[in-house]
Image 1 (spheres, rainbow, N blue to C red):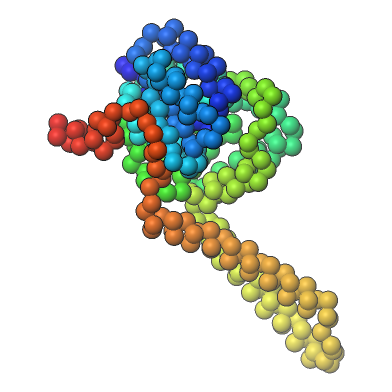
Image 2: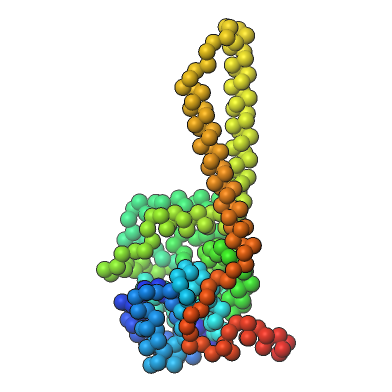
Length: 322
């Protein structure tokens, strides 16, 4: 059984050598043949040069570098496409995913699980961030077509058939947490202690977390569109009731000047509601727009992978065999 590690990298020159030493030490202790597929997501700090040096000294290192920054989702997809192992582990290069857990993942994989998922606890996280995260997962699990678990990220082991299942999903707007849940297969989860980044500021700003959360909310359901219909019907019913009330007051007490404040509040409120609903519809239309372009998820600038290892070549070879 051969193991593949997929490691997305973006501006990780400060830690990439330490990461490689740590993960190589643990993989050597396991005693299984392995490869490490580093995916440089358009770094501009020397990460690519560091990967080239690692590949020159370690024959287990495979790397590919994008022509620009395409995002972590594209980097994971590229790594999965090029990983040739029977089992594939996805992990970050910043040492927040402990390499010593790989042995535990392999032990569970050998028991027949297709997904072995490492769940990070939230020890040490700010209370506000923990609260917001729990509220988000509560909301998305009420709306989305798949169930997501709080604390579960990309750190996991996938069997070959789970990887092949993921590669069948070719959508441009990728939300891996949802895709992992969507493919199903036999899964098991275990928890590990949160590892803080020493001396490094997290790249996950509030804005990026908000955008990522919206991606997850919109990628696996159409309920916001259904909500727009319900809210529209509710506002129509309220407006009809208000009109009946105005007519009744006019008949019983005579015609009075309508309230200016009420009128302005109604106009502003309904206008804002319409803009929100148009924004929701626009998000879905925008996703359709990007899907119809059928652009590639990434472009490779440099790699040490053999052309025979390209996914299209491997697929053609498999078809000839079958």
